[in-house]
Image (cartoon, rainbow, N blue to C red; front, side):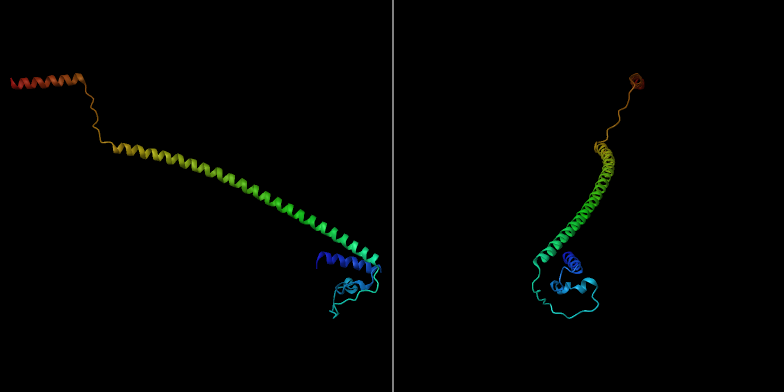
Length: 168
């Protein structure tokens, strides 16, 4: 049952108890019995309710104004509750997003450090491979021999003497 219908039922029940509202003005689903106690048995009644002979328009206007006021108050309360729930939900979402942002920043920092270490090691390995490739791509060069000029001169003289002495 809608909130408006419940409030109308409450207002009409109050007015019936004060004897301000004749029973004939109530719709069938808002009869006095249903206002005082729960339905225990279903009555077969006609849906048609004949209008009262001469309802008092002032009393009816007062009842309608009270009902409208209660509906407005209840609607305002419900809107306040919904607004509060929305604010709480929005706060929870904002908190979760902040935690997510912090986690993303932390993971990004850690990933950057890992990439930096990897890049440094990969660069060092690549430079080592390039150095080896250059070394193996050059033709082998004989190593220069260090010559002692005094010893070379003595060897040359000895060779000359042998040549001359052997031929003489």
